[in-house]
Image 1 (spheres, rainbow, N blue to C red):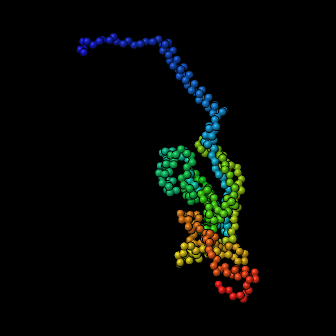
Image 2: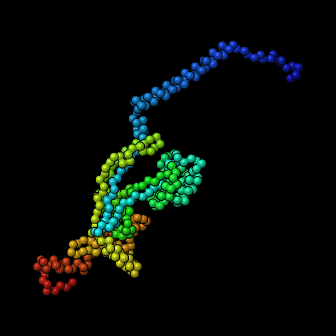
Image 3: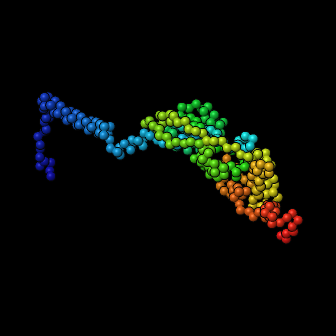
Length: 332
């Protein structure tokens, strides 16, 4: 198309509306937006009132899960002592290191993690990862040494605190370990006297419900106002010194002859008290390890033929019944 053939349009003139018309249109839009927002607020308010005044069963269950938690509160576990009162099994409060991530700023997290890593021997990257979680309760280390706990407290950071919880402890280490047994992580006896006398040792316990705030922290008394009966202490006839001497003798037998196991019992013949019940090899109930074999108490768990050591009892019974006399000759 040639330039001479182009259609020439008249220039557009600006549209001019009266101020009253423009103002009226703006007011209508404003009223429409206000009406929409009011309707939205009314709907939200009505839903909130419905949830508060007549919530559904599902809503109540969800609210309960978010507001309440459950914890098993256990009384102090009883101690196990030898005949002289020396502690063979007791419970001690061990420190755990905890952190509140909400009180750590992103800027200070790397430096704080590096300082903590040097104290609790946990990788700094792992600590930083826990600092980034949406929680106010994160365990950084459990069952740390008291000196480690003191070093963490010395940092004096508002996000850090020490929680102390009971842990079973055996002061004599491997001494009489097969007799004592051990407890699991929940504090229940699993082997030995810890298991057979668990009902006496563990004391009372109760399932406690506690309220939580919006951050997930407990707001109620941590004990729930409960006064639980502590577990009973158990006094054994074992003598710590006799037990130790017996175990050392068995260790010497194992070193010299390399049997699969060696075991012995020492009994006071005048009272029948068991002064020692020893096995070798043995184990440390404070650090179980993976091999269950040393945990077996051969003295009471193995079936052993009495052999010739029982002959005096057989002869005594025969004499008492008048079947033989002291001068009888018996071919055995």
